Amino acid sequence: MENTDPIQDIEISNIQRIAIKNLVKSPLNVRKKEGSGIAELAALIASQGLIQNLVVTEQKKKNKKTGKFEVVAGGRRLAALNLLVA
Image (tube, rainbow, N blue to C red; front, top):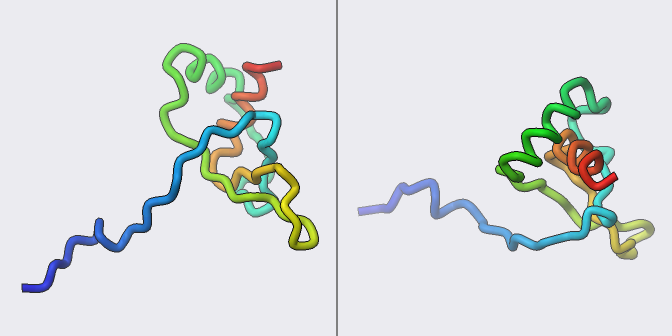
């Protein structure tokens, strides 16, 4: 019998801790503006912690690593985290 479990088709990526100073918003991020509610989101993160990780990809310029990581999912969370460390 063939296993049709969709979980098996998901590739699990490594989870890494990256310093916030090395995170930048990706130009590929769907939201182009931060919008409202960033201060409220920052307060929520401060009280409950970051519940959902940011999704990043390593930034390259002219095929060379820059040491930065582009946030492709989680731009609002990044803005809120930046408020907390400011």
